[in-house]
Length: 326
Image (cartoon, rainbow, N blue to C red; front, side, top):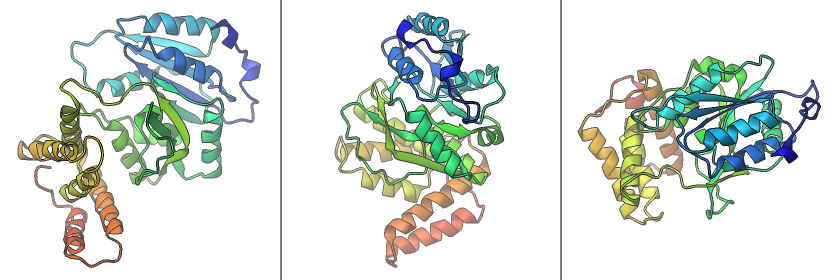
C-alpha cells in the first residue's frame, strides 16, 4: 500500500471537475484490495472516498483502515451488524456514506462496489462524458463478470448497474434519496427516477469494469436465482407484456429455456400473491410506459396482433389506471 501514497497535488488541478465516491461493503476482504488499488491509481483522484463497512465480520475494516493511513482522502465509516440482511442494506449503507461526506466543492458523486477492477483512466473518461453533455445526470461503465465477453452490446443502454453508478451532483440531490427494495433493483429505480426528473441516463458500453465475483448469487442454485429475479421484476413494477417479451429473449441464455421459465414463473407467482410494490405510483406508470415503448420499437412497423395488443396495453399504462397486482 505504501507504493500508492499520493499527495493532494497529484489529484488534479483546481480547474478539473471534482468527484467523491461512496462504497458500501460487507465482508469483502478477498477483493476490496483490488478496488482500492484501482481507485488509488486513477488519473484523476476523488476529492473524498467514503467506504462504509456495514457490520463487517472479516478483515475488510482492517484493510480499509490501512488504506486511510496512506491516503487521507479515504474515510472509513463502520455501521453495526444487522440481524437481517436484504438487497435494501446496500441502499442504507450508501445513504450513510452520503451523510458522511465532509468536503463541499465537488461536482459529481459515484457509488462503487467493493469487488471491482478498472483502468486508471476510468473516472477521467466518465467525467468527460458528463462534461460534454449537460443533460446527462447518471452514467457508468458496463460491469462484466470475469469470464464473460467484454464486447457485449446490451439492448438497454439507459440503465446503469448500481455497482458503478456515477451522478451529476444536482441529479443525485434532486433524487432525494435512493429507494430501498428488499428484492433488489434499487439501481434500476434510480435510473427511472432520474429520467422522470428530466435527466438523461447512459450505460457506457466501451468502458468495461471487471466484476470479480458473480452477481446476484443466492442460496438454492441457478434456478432459484432466476426465480428471485422474476420476483424482483414484479417488485420493480415491470409490465406483464414487457416481462413476457423479456423472458422470451432469455430463452437461449444460460440455463437455456428453464432459466427463462423460472424467471417468468417468479414474476407470475409474485403477481398472483399480490406482493406489495414499494415504488411510487407515478414511477410505476412512467416505467410501464417506457417498457411498452421498447416493446413497440422491437415490433418495428409491423401491425401484427402482438403489436396491437401492446398498443392497447400502452394506452392503459398512460391512462393512470392501476394494473393487476400493482
